[in-house]
Image (cartoon, rainbow, N blue to C red; front, side, top):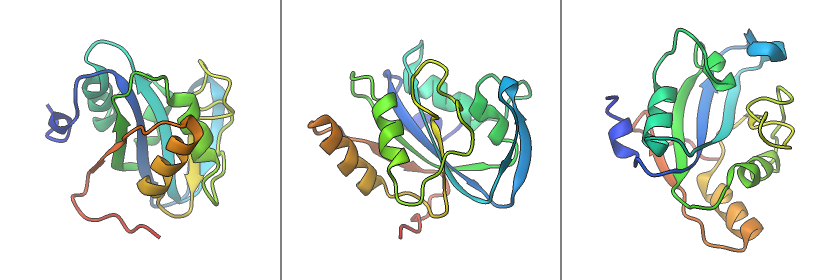
Length: 164
């Protein structure tokens, strides 16, 4: 098992992957088509409700998969996951997370429908020129839901992330 995956619980929950793409890329995303991805940071939100919960889903995301299963698998060929945020709340948070990420200053949607086939959101992937702040994200989520939902953070490079 990936050593990072050991730090993630096997409970069901919701997560955000923070990816960094160093150089502009173009790739095909399943049936959605081909798209350009500018350099920068990307936040992708998802949920893990199946067997093995967050640990199983994030283990999948942390490894290279020769046959992409989810839209996000296509970006991992040239982007690196630098952080993971997750919550084990029983609330279904994916839609709310997407809205909060879309309201992040400077956020844009690179691909309509990315990762959101089971949701009415425009996308579950957001491009950001700077790395997003988990503190700002937590604050927006708690305000939006009027609840105190805690999100954990795992930094994959083991270095402090350069928050603006």
